[in-house]
Image 1: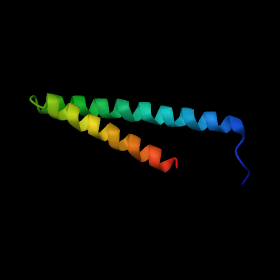
Image 2: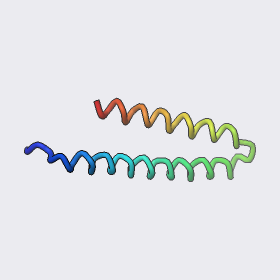
Image 3: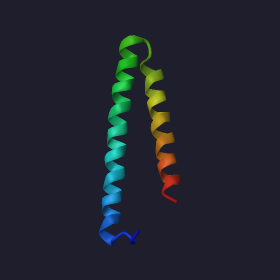
Length: 65
C-alpha cells in the first residue's frame, strides 16, 4: 500500500467531521424520540446526549493517535 498524499490529510479530516455531524444528527433524533415517549425526560435526555457526544469525541481523538 502506498503512503497517503498530503491532500489525503484534508480528506480524512473532512470525513471525520462528516461522521461527527451524522452522529450528532442521529443522537438528536434519538433524544427527540425519547423525549416524545417519556415526557419528563428533557434534562435527562440532554445529559445523555452530552455524555454520548463527549465519549464519542474522546474515542475519536484516541483513535487518531
